Amino acid sequence: QVQLVESGGGLVQFGGSLRLSCAASGSAISMYTMGWYRQAPGKQRELVAESTSSSTTNYAATVKGRFLISRDNARNTVYLQMNSLKPEDTAVYYCNAERTYVWGPSTSWGQGTPVTVSS
Image (tube, rainbow, N blue to C red):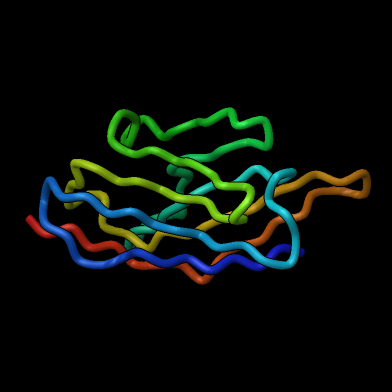
């Protein structure tokens, strides 16, 4: 199973940028769908962006055009570049790795990194 460690969160002003990193270990991410999720206080965790093993990307409508997910398989790391940040982007951001085996799916989560956008 893959282990994930996020970094790069913090406090940023409205309109600013942050880049989150997710370092994976224990397994190569090249065969995984890697995703970034977020959970704001009192809300459910939601998908922000994902990158499949074939490098197809998907984004939540609320971040499309502002966020960019990328992966460096050689470094076993996934990134989330967040631009034009808004207060509503404030949340804990989690990295996720998913892979479907013959016997079923395997999912791993990081511990999360908090992002606060001030107005």
